[in-house]
Image 1 (tube, rainbow, N blue to C red):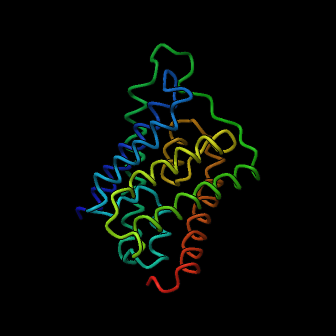
Image 2 (image 1 turned 45 degrees about the vertical axis):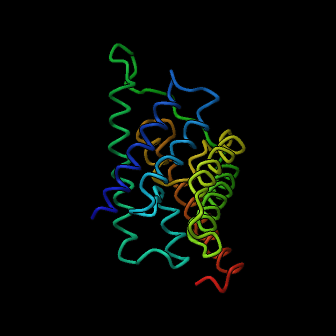
Length: 214
């Protein structure tokens, strides 16, 4: 139960930061750094309890790699999604202008489907591949840089691909930004398909390259 709580709290704080730095007045062009730094902090803070996934695609990748119990997969996903929902409503309360004509905080982005799918797939693959190599591989066991590597993967991918897809690389983050109207509900499937596929391929790639690391 403690690890599910850690995943909930981590996802809550993660989405809270995303919403606060992305929605005006936010952090502008520095938003990817704030978001990546938040993930780094949360991985260090909760990694020893839950593994510090904070991402359904990462949970899928770690499970396929063989380092997450099957019984934990769905509870992790539920905890992560609930944390995203809870944070979204807090951000809405903190950011919404009660005097505004429209109840929405922002105008949802317009996404180009195929490029967005490709961007989310690549960004999530990079994140999950990094997680598997720095946080689950025997060759890097006990290292102190795993959180930094994971957080900065998000920073780099957000700068590189965020302008195309919004740079979620995380189905729970995608849920949060959909609730916050940063992205359209009709685009949610792009994140679910692209992100989960990227996580799955990262796991298969890791296992192919490291067949001896069971």
